[in-house]
Image 1 (tube, rainbow, N blue to C red):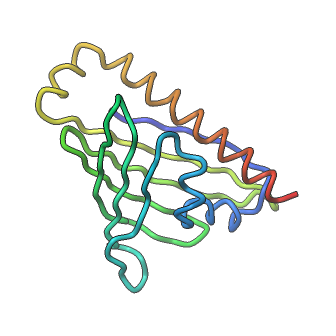
Image 2 (image 1 turned 90 degrees about the vertical axis):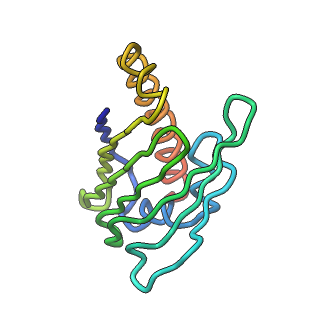
Length: 149
C-alpha cells in the first residue's frame, strides 16, 4: 500500500527538519510514540540504525530500521520493520520563501496473516493510515508554527 501526504507549514525548512531529528521533539508530534532513538550512528547518518516503540492496542510494539536517505533540510527517508509489516517513509522538505512544504511518500508492506487480512480490508487500512498521518502532521504543523513565532 502506498500513500502520499503534503502539508504546508509556516516555519523555515531547517526548523521543521529539526522536529524530525530531535528524538524528544519527534515524540511530541507522533501519536503513541514512546521511544525514538538512533541505536547505531554513522558518520553522515545515512545507514544509521533506529529503534521506535509505540503504545498500541494495550501492548508495546517495537520497530527497528535504518535511515535510508539523509539530506539535511531537504530529504529524510527511513525504513522501519515490525513483526507483521515494514514501512518506508520518504520525507521531502521544500523551501517556500521561509515556509515549508513537507511531502511524505509512504509504503507499507504487510507480512504473514496481516497480508491476508489486509487484502479484504485494504481500503479501510489505507484510510486509517492517512487519517493518522493527517493527525500527526497537523500536530507537527501546530508545534512548528508556535515555535517559529
